[in-house]
Image 1 (tube, rainbow, N blue to C red):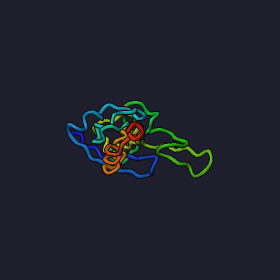
Image 2 (image 1 turned 60 degrees about the vertical axis):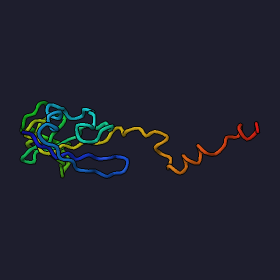
Image 3 (image 1 turned 135 degrees about the horizontal axis):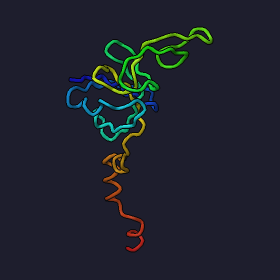
Image 4 (image 1 turned 180 degrees about the vertical axis):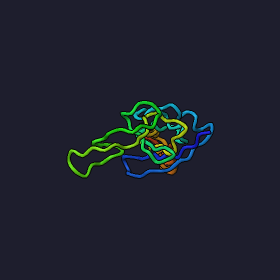
Length: 144
């Protein structure tokens, strides 16, 4: 069965966290493509919206968004994921993985697109809420 190590990055803070999912929790990820936005509940982060940004397979070959399917191919690259040229105009044949998550993928990279919305009451400490409720309003003070 599939087992994935998922790296979730937060672009606002620059921090990332690692989550491991396996078996029944990993099934919703199989068949997804890079660039898709999905619900974070599949990765134990309910309320979040996550975007699939990349990954690598069991042998360390990176996933590339412009290679379709879950296959491993040898492609001639001039730049981008999987190859960074040292000289201008340099090209090289590199082995890469397609943009679909399969069972041979080991690591999946995601970034947070949307965080859960916080309610107004959740932001106030309990002591301030108690004072606000017990304090008389201005209208009540003027009528007495």
